[in-house]
Each structure stands twice: as structure tokens, then as C-alpha cells.
Length: 308
Image 1 (cartoon, rainbow, N blue to C red):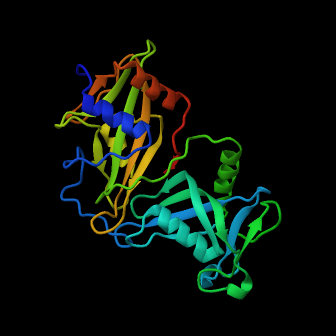
Image 2 (image 1 turned 180 degrees about the horizontal axis):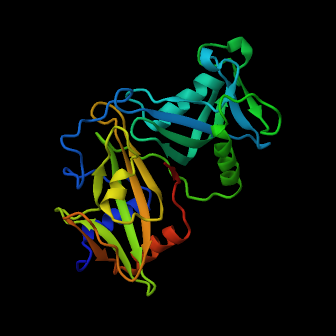
Image 3 (image 1 turned 45 degrees about the vertical axis):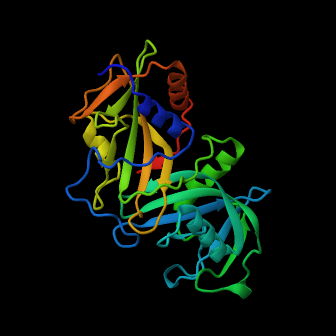
């Protein structure tokens, strides 16, 4: 552990707690040897999915036109195109498959199976358009309809049912503030780690990188075969039992197909856990306002879920 927290680190924490974006450092604390910038649809695949609810609590569904699942129903979703932001991709997919225009309200959850497949699930609001009918059927979908979730409907996959349930629960009682992707470029899939240790006496520590300027640790995720959380598990002997996403940063475009996940995790103990890597240390949070904001975020569990 070190002495006082630097003003730069404190400002970085405040910006992220406010939902803002922080540019990535020139040098990452953990990274594979010679990492190659990600290229959408080649080394990484992002899926954007929208859950839209109407005033009756029905969910917007589209009927599949793909030969392998023709006639079944699913939430509007699809692959992000090169150069798109996550929000642009969501709005395009919803319009193509359902005929409706939408505005995202918040991310509901992020699901990952390593860098090869990451799905961003949004709760969104209809802002216009006309519901797609069978007369407008095309390669994107056969039609769209509102579903009451009770009537029988042949689903392409039941994996959307927990997501619909999550959206209905959030609509009734939001579990986290609105979290939408912030525009900030990243060439890699990166975890920015906001790791906090809380003591029974009310002390608060934050893990920092000692690389100048001092900042929150950043790790580059491998692109093949492993969870994007693997660096977090390798950093500490015992990873945090509780964690979630404080924010998402993405821009898209040349050399910017990566995403930065601002991951927040919490430990409880008389002192912080041992870090297995050089160049990182724990620093005490002395500013009472910042300490209060960190503990409130953790205690109220207002983080975006990450399903791994």
C-alpha cells in the first residue's frame, strides 16, 4: 500500500462514477505479447439486441426469415457493422427487423463468450416507425409483433426469456442508473479495473497502477478461447466475488473496433488482498466525498450485470 491518492487518479474515479469516458493509457498494465488491433467480424463479433416494451407490458418480437430458423420468433438483434457505434447498430437492427424507430434507454446486461462473441442487450423505447407486416417481409424478417409473453409463440431460442424478464423488472424498478456506451476509441478489448477493498472500520482502498501518470489498472484481453475476465482472475489469487460494469466505452472505425469495459469489483477485509503483479499497489481513499460515492455504488449494487 502507498500513501495519498494522486489528484489524477481521484479525477479518473469521479469521471467514471459520473458515467463519463476516460481515454486509455498509452501503455497497458497487462497485455498479450504484441497484441493485434481487433477487426470486427474477423477477430471479434459484437451482437446488439433490443428489448422494447409497450404500455401494455408487451415485448417487441420479430419473425425470422433465415432458412435455418424460418418462422420462429426472437428479439430484434444482429451483428454490429464496421464503423458503427453500438447505439447506431441497435437502432439499425430494430428498424430493419421490426420497422420501428427506437431510442436506447440503458444497457440491461452484457453477455460474453470471450472476444469472439459479446452481446450488448439494450432496453429501448419506440420513437416512431410502422410495425412490419407480412406484406413487407424481406431477408431481415417476415414480420414483427408485440407479444404478451404468455401466449404460445414458437421461439428461435429460449435464451431471450431471462432477458425479457430482466427488462420487465427494470421497467418496474430500475436496478442501475442509465448506462449507455460512451464514445471513446479502443483498438483492443480492454478491462479497466476499479477494484475496491472495504474494511470493517470503514477504510477504503483502490488498486492503482504506479505507471506514470498513476491510473487505474488496464488489461488487454486475449482474443481466443478464454473469457474476457481471465485477466481479472490472473491478477489476484482470489478474484472479487462481486463485480459488474460501471461503464462501456466504444467508438468503432479504423483501429477502434475494441471496447473498454470499466469493471468494478469489491473485496472485504482488514486489509487489501495481495496483488500478484509488479507495478500495482493499493492506495487509501481519504477524500470523504469520493469514499462515500464508491461505497454507495457498491452497497446499492448499481452496476451493469456481466454474464460470462
